[in-house]
Length: 314
Image (cartoon, rainbow, N blue to C red; front, side, top):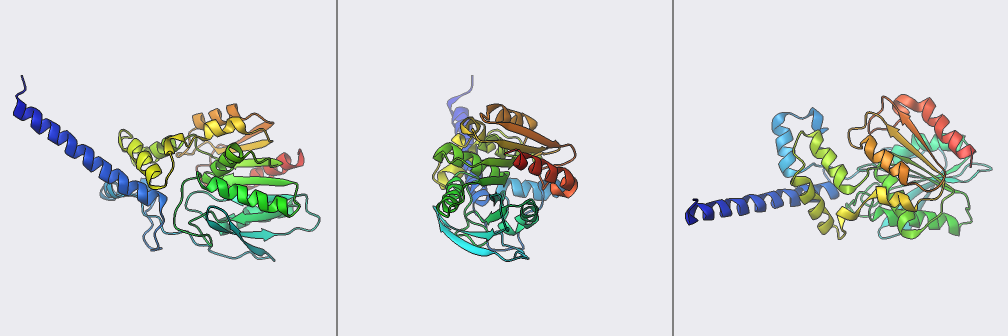
C-alpha cells in the first residue's frame, strides 16, 4: 500500500501541476484576446516555428500586435464612427445606382483595409460597401477581441445605422471571426439582412482553440479547456457557450457558406454541421486547394462568380 507520506507528495504534486497549468492558460488566454502595441512582436505561424519557439509559444501564448490599417481606399469614402459596446470605425463607399449595401467584417487579428480588394469587387457588382474595424483593430476602440462574441453587437450597430439611413437591402459578408459575429448577431438580436455570405466560421469556441493546439502538435486536454475557461472569465462571457453551430439554427435569411478544403483551423465537420442547421435558403461553395486564407488568392474568378450568382438570385 502507498503510505500517507507518498500520498501527500502525490497530492501536492498534482496540485502544483494543476496550478501551473492554470497560470499558463491564464496568460495564454489573455494574449489570445488582447492585442499588444509592439508591431515587431507578432508570433509566426506555429507550423514554421522551431521546436524551442513552439514550446515557448505553447507556454507563454501567441503575441499579436494591434492590427492597423495598412492603406486607405483609392476612391472617395466616408469615415463613420459608431457607438456600440465599443466605438468602432467604418468606411462607407458609395456606388451610383446601388443595388444595396454590403457590410464587410474581418477575421481575427484583421482590420478593414484588408477588405479593400473584396470591397472593390462588390462595388463593381453594383453595391455600396461598408468596411468595419471590430473593437481592438484599426481605428476602433480598445485592444480587446472576443473572437466574435461581443463583436456581434457591433454587427448589429452597423446594420441599425444603415437601416436608420433608409438602406433596406443590407447584405453581410464576413470571414472566420467576422462570419461568427454575423451569425451571433442574427441569433442574439434577430436582425434580418437580405442575405449573408460567411467564410470559414468555426463550429465552437472550444473547437477553434483545440485546432490551434493541434497546429502546434500539442495535446488539447486539459489546456484547451482551461484556455477557453480563462479567456471567457477575463472577458466577461461564458466562452463554452460561444457556438456558431447553434447560432445557425436561428438563421433564416439566404446564406452563402464558403470553405477552403485545406483549412487547418476549421474542419469540414464543423462546416457541415453549420450548413445542416441553417434554416433559410442556403448554398455552399468550396475551394479544393484553399486553406484558412482569402480565397481570392487562388480562386479569385470562382469567388467572384459565387458571390455574384448568390446576390443576383436574391
